Amino acid sequence: MFFHRSILLGVRTFAMVPCLVLALSSPWGSGRRGELFVMWSADDPSLRTQIAALSPTVSPDEARQVAYTAYMTGRELHREWRVAWLPGIQNFLVNIGKRKGGLCFQWATELLVRLDALKLQTLELHWAESGANTGAEHNVIVVTARGQPFGEGILLDLWRYSGTLVWTHVGMDPEYHWTENKSELARRLGRTTDVASKQVRSTTKSN
Image (cartoon, rainbow, N blue to C red):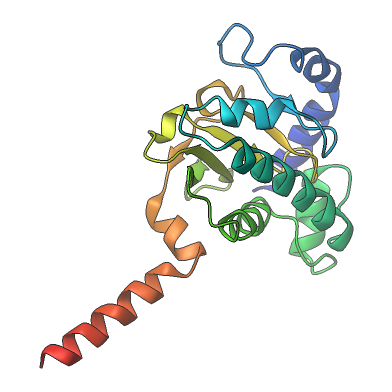
């Protein structure tokens, strides 16, 4: 993302905190665009409740694991990457080599890998992007019930609040319009290489 755009987003996001506190009282509220929610602690029940409500098939324990892992990933990486209070500042520091991580795709990738390690059976992970292949590209992880359409999922964003977990329904984000990228999900998890290797082995055996 461009540095100047990220700075503006950081200032705007900081100013929205009181609004987000109020929004926490009623997920999904009116169901209109413009609603964001913040997970303030590892024990906050709002996110896990909404994940469990995605479908009757969702395991409450898996919903809890996803919410807890997402929250803790943000906290741990905030410390490890020495994250600045504005995303744009962190982006700048990463780009000049002063910080190890903190770009949006790095947050999303780290979260994806940790959630994938949970070996979820009733939930499915998706790579989401907005403004793909532009200087304003943003990436997050979306979770749905297994087999559920991407558009019915919940997005998990660690970049926007510098490691504090922001979440909402995919269609309710006030700043971004999200699309799914299945090939990028596979690439980030290293599965494209695995699939190619299996195809090579299969071809070799048949010759």
